[in-house]
Length: 129
Image (cartoon, rainbow, N blue to C red; front, side):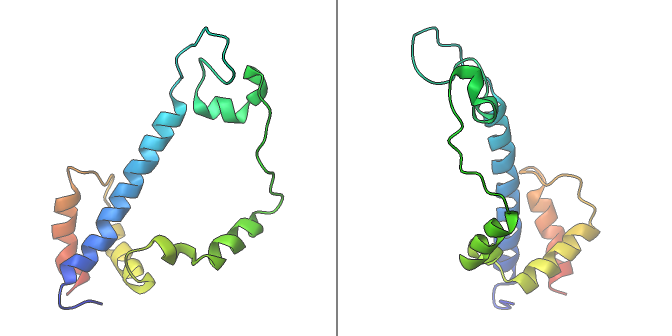
């Protein structure tokens, strides 16, 4: 642990957690929004969500060009060969586990931009006692 600036280590664990949650929420919302109906004779989907367009390409005259992967272990192996979860982590696995344990003990219903500072100030003495 970085004992010279312990709060920065907690920041590097907590704020990315919040940002990833918000990015996932935004992506889910955006991909579920219906595209405007375009009456022009253009190729491509119109009047449906991105999720529908990619899941059901035949609805708009498209074709499925996604590569099928029969075995999810192939994806896990590729991810691990690139660095695993540590590739996009800003803290060590040991610190992450320690911080997550204290985070879970607080029984936080939803981490938001409104409460992240309160969560941070509550966790700081717990994590670095």
